[in-house]
Image (cartoon, rainbow, N blue to C red; front, side, top):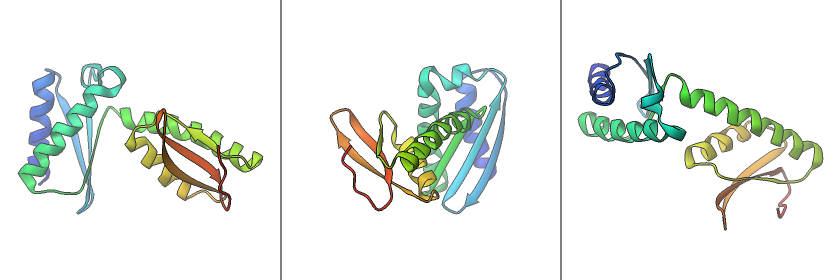
Length: 154
């Protein structure tokens, strides 16, 4: 399984860039595989706003699902791009959570993609004193962080 994944990822990466890639596979469970790719110059593979890495992730996921009949979650990161972005997001969310707890007022967080919203929901599940929910708004999906036990209108 690991060799097949490495081969697929290597083909996708070498199609886009000549840079050699170091590929690490971490099978967390039967339902979750993490792929970490390290390359010398990742800018071409990450793209503006992470658009290229998102496309690589989609293509790799489709190829791996087809080759291995894998139906679980596939996480792909290049030079810790997502890891660093997630840490930045969670630092901002920690500040918002502190404000929600101290002020007792709900806060809205806009412009998160589905992966980021899931990350925030999972993070906040482990925090006492707040609950989260996502709703549709005129600006797209909005994530709401509110004090637990309250149903605030924001």
